[in-house]
Image 1 (tube, rainbow, N blue to C red):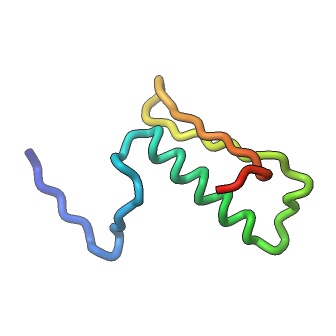
Image 2: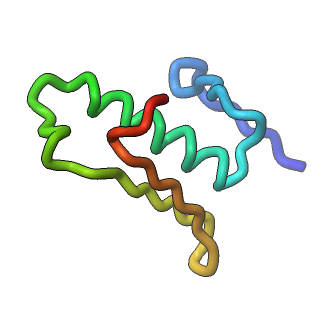
Length: 72
């Protein structure tokens, strides 16, 4: 196979068991929801939930949805 080198500063480890679309979209959705909860000007009382869709290809995507009244 081909070897590819990326600059260290462009890489990071994600706290997911593996990089399936399902794990990645859950990580992204939970991270965005947590950040929005911490934003002082985000209108949590006017937003019921968040939906994130990650496309793996033209034919497949994974979806994560979460409410703002859920903990975690």
